[in-house]
Picture 1 (spheres, rainbow over the protein chains, first blue to last red):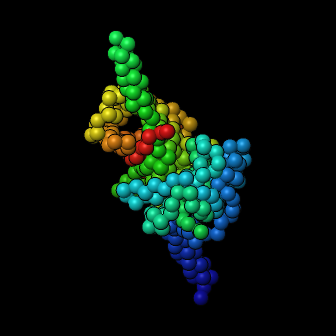
Picture 2: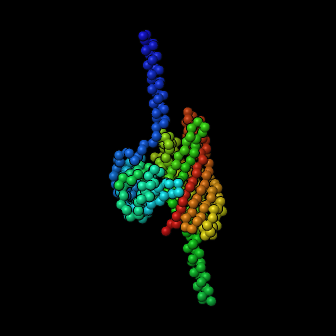
Picture 3: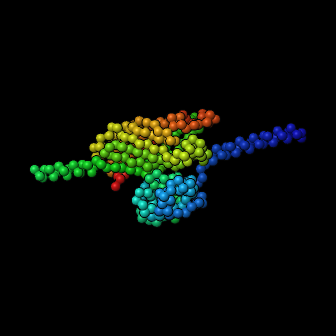
Length: 140
Length: 183
């Protein structure tokens, strides 16, 4: 085999790999947080205190991270479309932790009661009125 | 005479208590579509916070940009890092007023068309918008629905030429909030 043939084959292989890798990246689904390991384990009051004392430091530390938060349930809301949300009491009446669940978790969330102690895992997206966790599932 | 005055006073107090009602939600849904024939782009945020003042018609919404969920991981990454710069501008906020609201509306269950006027802040840019929507009032809950276009260039969001055919120039934003009485 001549050198130019070798080069041609190498180039074709490279292009095919690049295209396949591109397609893989393009079609990649968002990470399934239910199966992800938590990077932080914290109480609801610990998390809200962190955001209330220094929001930018807390944002750096927790936002976009997988966080397991434990606390007492303040309220459970299930919307008509099946979207489930749990609010965790932090002891501070102004700031709770809003946990928005995967739609597939609605049945499990329905069984939760106000006042119950629970640990919820999700991705922290920041603070509005509450500190917000997305893509949640129940750990315990 | 005294009795009438007292009754009148009580009526006023009661009416005021009824009218001064505020409604809130922390799990409202805000979604948008910005796809074209080449690509479907849909994102949903299920943790919008909103407060509605029945007495004045003031209405406010806030969402965390990082709370928008996409079907593809890369889309969400580009949306946050390149287009919305969500680390720099973490929130989108709307502050406005329902212009055709009569406070008595909240006393009467039903479905009412409304017009909302206010300032929408996205990507650090504030712009006045007007949109129509509806309020469904039933007892102690209120559902608000609205759909309005957002022109991406208005908010200084730069879409690179290479993907400009895939992303719509105007995003359609949908809002669906179920309010409870703020105690």
